[in-house]
Image 1 (cartoon, rainbow, N blue to C red):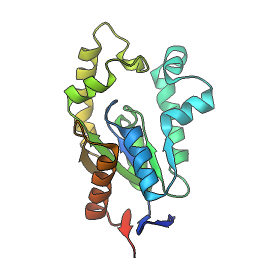
Image 2: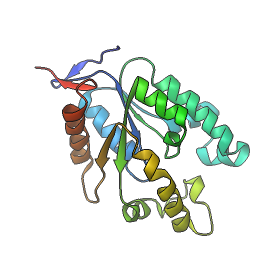
Image 3: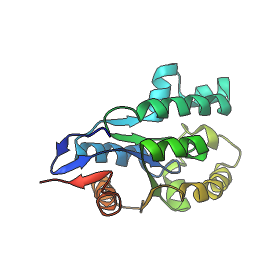
Image 4: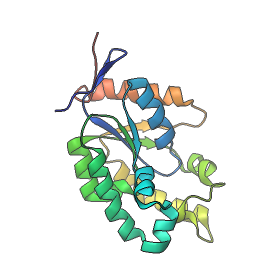
Amino acid sequence: MAEGAVHKGLILHKTVVFVGMMGAGKTAVGRTLAARLGVVFRDSDHEIEEAANMTIAEIFERDGEAFFRRKESQVIGRLLEGRPGVLSTGGGAFMTEGNRRMITELGVSVWLNADLPVLWDRVRHKDTRPLLKTPDPLGTLTRLYEQRVPIYAQADLTVRSDPGMTLDAMARRVTEALLAERPDVLERRE
């Protein structure tokens, strides 16, 4: 097992992988948690965009969702190798059984669970969500939410993403959940 550096009395043994709906805060909370733990932060969508030199929306438009999902699985596998860190994944990444298995074997999945009204409030004014480029984006988000929540519930840990919480408070909430429930992933060392 790879071992991360001790930082502020905490040691991370496995990569923490944030899963959940668009707008749940995976990237923002992930960056904050990585800084708190003194480890590297990675975002699978960003890594895909960098490798393709295109946005996710452009990849969806040019090559389709199936192509994107194959590339996403490859990138997640690569990002789970090496020293433990924090990884944010796209909202659909956890829907693939192979990704779920790989994440659980090589890391720990943390579902940032936010209610639908919170998600809608966070994403409704953004045009960077290719799956919401429909005549009824709220209806589309609602359908995605209803389809995906039972799958996200299979994550190794669930942490509520409540409205109004600061990023630091959310990172503390995730840290406390990991320490309490997954000492094989995150432990306190003096």
